[in-house]
Length: 238
Image (cartoon, rainbow, N blue to C red; front, side, top):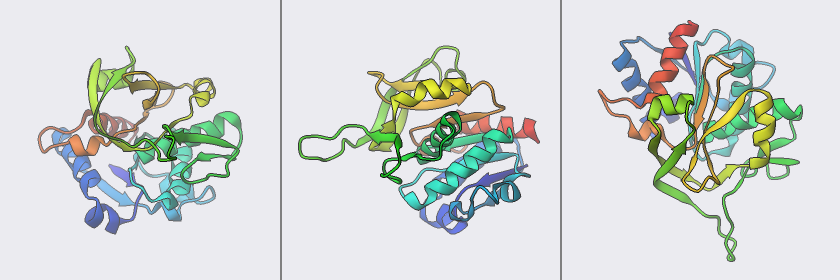
């Protein structure tokens, strides 16, 4: 089973190996033999996404702070959505997934993360809060979330859960209505309901992302359920 991990191999192995390790935890728990294909986000565009990704059984969009990855992640998510290939997004990966859906729903590419594309007509992700001193609110650490009853995320995490966070931007709430036209919903929020912590679709074999870092909560013998659910969907796709 081939999983396309959207990132440079050297980065995923040497700089931030947690994503690869958590994927391994999930594969071991399920008894799956994975062929992890590293595809650098910088190498992906709309013209070559099918060539690079069509034979993958699942697409994983990792987190990170390097905005140069965003354009390629968006195209990978867009292709996975249109080709019905399971896609999972972690933090920045979720933001890229959501931006891809916003562009499809609104039929415009002039939509982008404020952090990566500040001149975009519509911000898919905007600052959580800017204080009087102009400093963005930085949401970090273990955060309690409220999960939508009956959602896939609830089936994975339960009605009450916590996620590890490290981000300064949140989904633009004005995009939730366009999302719904394609069958994508926000399935978890922060405790006061102002931040989207997970998105998913029940119109797709598997299309789910989490604003936190589930890979950091994975352990050998105790994988994160988001990643096991993703691999199970990828196995069904294969």
